[in-house]
Each structure stands twice: as structure tokens, then as C-alpha cells.
Image (cartoon, rainbow, N blue to C red):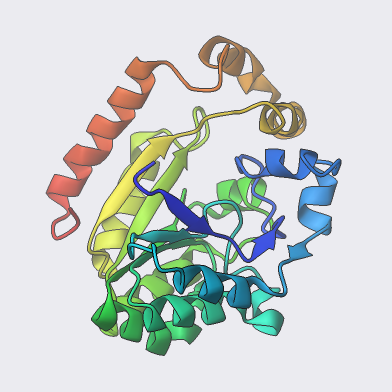
Length: 259
């Protein structure tokens, strides 16, 4: 996965992205991966204290910590609890590098902490954008900020000297795989100062699969047969992943300076 350590101040997410792999984690607590995932947000109120204690351990090697791997660290509840900000400050104080993944424009609030972390240990911020099309955005990611707001956050972070890029993920077969959609995201990322861009195709683990199939039944029933062929298992066929990655790589090379 590119990292050994992760930190998530919340569990569940009001962003409600229908494809979100983290939905399945709610079922571990006997909560529903559909409605409960967006309606029952668990707040780890002592997360900052626990993290600081872990970072003080004599054996801690200052390895990179991924923030936002199982929930969005900048969903609206962060405005009240400020746990993500506290965790980033703890990482900076411990000279521990971090990577942040979010769809939340609130990340620009913490430019000062991110700059401190950049200077002391290193940080990257990945802003997730799947589409610029407002209809597809509303259907797939009903509780998130509009893509335009996320792009403006990319620009603000880049202007502040914070290493920031765009994560074009997931690429959703039949909904966001068309070249025009991919090109629009890559071009906009470059225009807003993204320093890097990554992409990956949707995968559907048990728990998420059932929710996503219900979404397809309601929003895109014509795609059900396609998904039955593509997803007998959690991951799409290697050829599908390779084709989309190659398309994104070609677009990256065209819209330099995105790398």
C-alpha cells in the first residue's frame, strides 16, 4: 500500500461516496455499511493524545504516516473537533512525515501546520477528484464538496508551497472511465498547480459491493451486467486497470507539469 502506518481520527463519513471502500469497516462494529456509514460518525476524541504517546515510543523510526486512509480527515465534523489538525501538529512535533488524502477543501485551514510538517519531516496532500461533471459528481459523491472547490484547494495549497496533487480515484467503470472525463480531471489538475497525479480503478470488497450494486440498481441499472462481468472478484481484470492507467499516463505527459 506504500505505507506501514496510518492514522484516522474518525470512523464513518458523511461524504457518502457510494464506492467508498471504508464502508465495509462499519460492519465490523455491527453497523450498516450504507445508512449507518454516513449517519453514525465515530469520533476518536483522544486520538491526538494517543498518537503523541505512540510517537514518543523509543522504538519509533519516524516512518511515514498516512492520514485519511479509512475515513476523510476533513469531513465537516473536523470543523468542530479539529482532531486532524491536532494529529498533523503531533506528527510535525515528532519530525514524522505524513501523507494526507481528502476530498475536503477544509484542508486549506491547516496550511500553517502542513508547512511546519513539510519543513520538519515532509508531507504530501492528495486531493481526490473522480469527475468534474456535476451530474456524475452528485450521483457518486452526494455529500462531498463540488469538484471546483477541491481544485481551488489544490491551488491554495500549491501557492502555500505544500506538495499537493490529485488522486483520480477511483475510476468507476461505465461512469467515469471515458477519455473525456479523464482528460478533464488531468487538465484541471495541471491548471490548478497539482504537482503529481495518481489513478486507480474501482475495487469492490464485500460490504461495499452490496451497497454499490444497490446504487447501480437505482441510478444506472444498465451497468449491472457490466459489473457482473468485471467484478466476479474484488478487483477489475488486470487489462482494464492497465488500459486506464495507460490512458492517464498519456494524459499526464500531455498536461505537464503534472507527473
